Length: 51
Image (cartoon, rainbow, N blue to C red; front, side, top):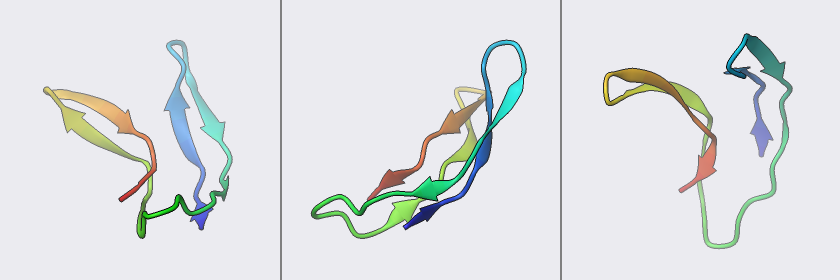
């Protein structure tokens, strides 16, 4: 599965993290790409994961 690249905050500035392939985890069927979401009123990066 292709994981697209994304920007990540390192505490000082944003830096680009390139995409790459991820191997399907046993027993998991669908990949959720990493995304920004509001958690507790603050924008946070939610890493990609299998569901």
